[in-house]
Image (cartoon, rainbow, N blue to C red; front, side, top):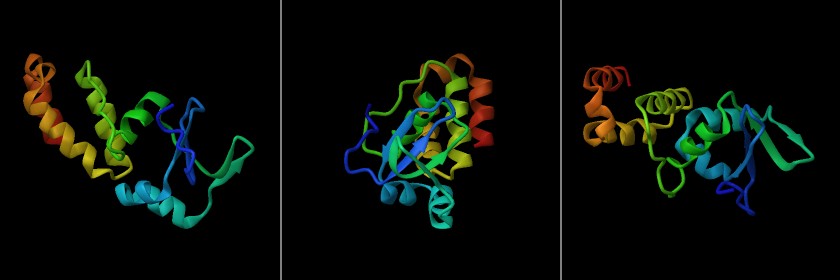
Length: 127
């Protein structure tokens, strides 16, 4: 329910049909991909949301984590490198630079990365 802002003017629908009511301005500032989607104005609408909707292929939990890097909210807590990789891939896909920068810093200090340092290095090299 974090991303159910009453003054939202844009909706992101995850692959598992969770609606995230967000602010167009913030999303456009954080992501050139979303900005381009909005500017093309080929977005759908529905009875469940009075404003434009964009469907994305990521599930709700990943979308929630991604939006936490756009809004000033507590960042997600990671339990594995796999989750970090999924978020880095989504950040790369939607061109959200904050995600890569924050996870890069996290890879330097997290015990998860220490337990699999070779993989953590490969991840940081890739992204």
